[in-house]
Length: 251
Ligand code: 13P
Image (cartoon, rainbow, N blue to C red; front, top):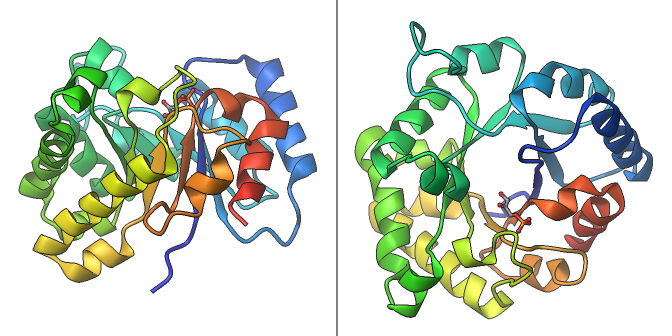
């Protein structure tokens, strides 16, 4: 089967109303009307409603960057899956490396968040990836499989096909150091092989995105790899020209 290509932006904690208005109109202005691929922007939660409105006449999907693993209650400052669904948020990133490293999100918490998203029909984008030390120690696949297995153990292998996986080597995020197409393809293929040990159909269906310093120059080669089904783009997603150039590099 052919998996659809998904080009996803992660704006992280950037922008304000004016910037976001300009960015969205610039993106829309550069998009071809017969666009084939899926496009997603993951925005600060405060601006979900605004971006949904700005994207209303397009097929750009809108996502959040985090959610609570709890469904409601005394969790000051948190945002639940049902709240995301309430504002028609379609996707949510879970387990981004910045959440894991800066906010102490363990793989157990990430798995709970993944399930919370599914419970509310919001598509979780599960971010996984190794640090430089882990790569140099030769433990990349142990780390990545462990991050995947936490979700599989909690929610079952079928749940993986209901979400999206984003392989983001930590050492490539925001560093300008991209994994080579061969390095990325190798890990993507191993992730798919790992999923296939549980369920061949799930392995075939699941979109696996690459993230980490993707830009208009390196995108074409990365996106041409057999097991790379799209990109999760940080810095370059804040510039419409670059983001759309990456979308076009997907062919
Ligand atoms: P950069 O594209 O800025 O490296 O960020 C990648 C990322 O973290 C996307 O989630």
